[in-house]
Image 1 (tube, one colour):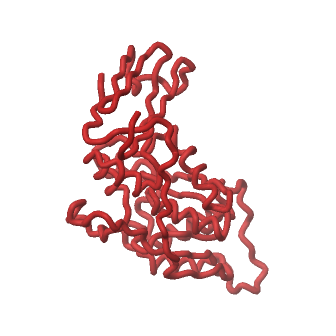
Image 2 (cartoon, helix red, strand yellow):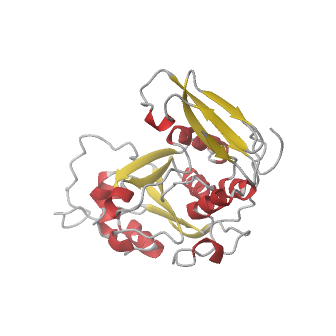
Amino acid sequence: MSFSTERFRFLLNNDDCRRDNGLRDPYVNCIQPTKSPPLPGCLSQNEDCQESPPEKLSPIAGGIVALGKFDALHIGHRELAIQASKVGIPFLLSFVGMAEVLGWEPRAPIVAKCDRKRVLSSWAPNCGNLTPREFHIEFSKVRYLTPRQFVEKLSLELGVRGVVAGENYRFGYKAAGDASDLVRLCEEYGLGAYIISSVMDKKQDSKEINASDSMERGQVSSTRVRHALAKGDMNYASELLGRHHRLMLMMEENDGVMIDTTHIHLELDVLATCIPLTSQDFRLLGIDFAGSGTF
């Protein structure tokens, strides 16, 4: 089995390609936490009426959650995490199971599941030495929530202290809420809301990516990362990701691999996707791809 790299070359374990993207001050709107609204059944804030304490705090209680899909963990996602870390403990909140519920065609992730912690750890120096953590919500459980119900869930059920989102963020059933709605509702529920400007991609014309996407305004996106990888433009992919793209191979101990400047040749007894994650007989091989250079 072989994987063609065609128009690009790659380097193994090369972390020298990180770039300073010169991000400008991203804030376009910011509110600080205010007093929480009266709880249901309370006539006023002055009455002796308090919500019963939850039996168990959520893992993100008291944290600041960045909202998004976080498929590629690109520089736009990193900027959300950086802003969250400036005001609290940063978490990345995203939904799982969207493809199954909405009938999307399955596709391989841009970042291997086993490699996501490494990527997030690399963000720590930019996040006040805090490594952002991920928190997932089943999409089927929140699909029909209105924007207000979603913010209420963040506040009352999950106990977060604030949210960070991009200026184009939409939420709620049928994407009914936008960034201004998020700010308004967070203020009502006593949450901090931090809306940041999109990190723009200065290299490619949006028409080359997906002209039919109404959210496409030239910002860095997972769609653009996939486009770069499909074209084999690893310099471009590295700029969008803020790091080299890494391919993770899961191999049994006796499997072989040979790498030259154009192909990765694998000799596998069993396909990697068929090896159980609980197996103790496999090893992980990470291959970093750069835009140019020698092996």
